[in-house]
Length: 373
Image (cartoon, rainbow, N blue to C red):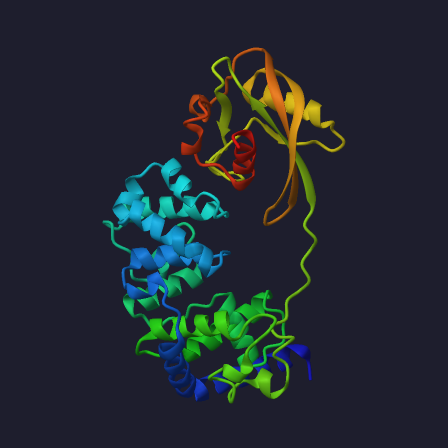
């Protein structure tokens, strides 16, 4: 049998099985959820703003780490209107240390669009929702099902893992064809009644029982239906293609003080890496470049000043999504010129007492901790 026909048969059989077992799965899963669900702050609200915020924060971040940020964010910006009217810098400051800062920028941009184009109300249809920055099919599904009671799936990483095991989907989950199959399976399963509760239950099952490496199958309410458990395949599913190794990059930063002991800092471009955050003058090394020469070149190119690299203050290791970074930090002295750049508000001298009011990435915060410890 041709591979394509075989895959079509597998898809058909999986969807048929999902349709036949949908009611039973919903009954077993939601009963388990109501008895065992974790008491999380965003589960006590139907406000689409709060639900949207929690879903954005939970991307790439563990629940335990999100909870204090979530509460602090809502204290600072209790409504979407207040978020929209806040300066981006204030939003980034509240987000500080949580990483993946594009999420915060998207939150801010989306809040402004909702205020300007939707009268401050979340649109209740997927087309309008997914036209907003940072909202894809999963986030749209979560908002629509939990806040608006729409019978649509919400397929995150946990749900993909559960469905892969439940229906023995052994093709790589990062393939487009597999993602489509899992989404189709989720559509078959989500009930018309209380779809938000069902989607949350499916996510919860993946988070607490159907875990990546050590699934707790003996406690699973869907054990009797799970094809992976029946075939002892739960430990190798889901399947993923091998990830490429993260490259290593090197960068430099200069700690420059003026006569009043103020520190020179610059703001990163809004759309770039760690956009909108403040940092010390510097940047990435060219291949084969000497670190002290890189400090001087970066300061000359970025601020039109001649700087002498002084003592090495520290060397930091930091891991980002797509690369590992070694950051060399030097003391710097301005020999000639005054700081200047095309965008005048993208650099400033800041006193030690005020510098903590600016949003920095984790690496810069480590520098500040060393400087003022």
